[in-house]
View 1 (tube, one colour):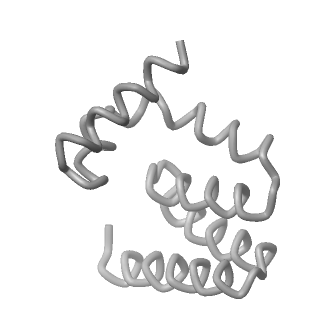
View 2 (tube, one colour; view 1 turned 60 degrees about the horizontal axis):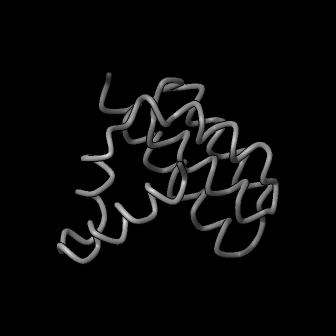
Length: 100
């Protein structure tokens, strides 16, 4: 991927996050969708879109994205992104068990 494309994606993601902070969720969604046009298989961008849907209370759309992402992202990656303390992993394990 060209550096210009990477920088465009980064700018669009920052723009979307900024719009979210301002609670302008339609504009945030539009920015992330533009980024997804440049990199449609990005787990990170799809996750950002899900977060926008959650914040805008569009739970059905958020859930659909998160379900689609679940097999693509390992739990190990999720743990590494979170606080890496043992307590956090224990809490995540309890959460996982409560889902089943």
